[in-house]
Length: 323
Image (cartoon, rainbow, N blue to C red; front, side, top):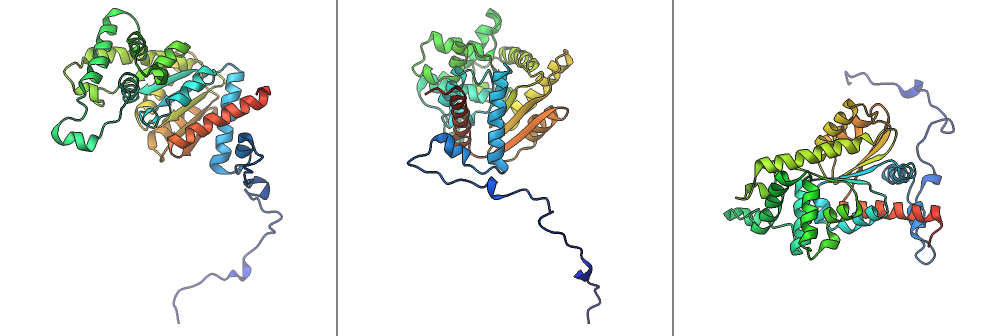
């Protein structure tokens, strides 16, 4: 005979399912795509109205609402976004006046410059670090470091603008897919945020710490000014940056508020391949804790961001009736 007492379920109180609060019903279910008759908007409209699909729709609507109200849509991004080939998708949204500002870590700028100038990027780190060759591409370091050093003493351009102007002046062979150059030609504020010692150009003889620090500091001030526009609305997207952009954004937003901007009531959305501490705290939660909404979607950038962009364009088309 056991010595353990056991709960008696005879006295458990049950409730009717008709009165129970439930979160899912058939109206929320997915609708199969008809490949012969359905449009892209039918496909996205047929996604389940549940969890990430529901959030993706909400983010889409927040972006469209912000642009109708002339509020900013800030895209913050890490290097992987360039590496997986998303620059053309982002550039398209720039030209459609959907994205109004871009902020990237300096690794993203490296990939952008290498692609624009030499048509390839993303070296084999594991292979090249064996004999000390990792990050030692001479042309990359010379282009970025000498451009920054020259601009630091020769004007008031920031990191991103200096690189963009240099790419344009040199007529980079792949200029059409340069996000930096496209931001400049579209008149879209772009900023680059460097952590000295974190990038390959910092380990080369051409590195100028003072110039790099000055140029990225100028861009920090520009980002803080952009954050002032988040008063009463706007959207901040953080795509693929786990540390640099969430940290920089939190400080830039604080500066904007400290200078008197009531930068609250906006929407934030993190897109990443797994859940990270800093994007959760510094993008999703803390900036929206006193007004606004934050989202976090998990998935590969090369799938999730084109899907978001296509949903935005599809909704824009349906609202204007354009063909």
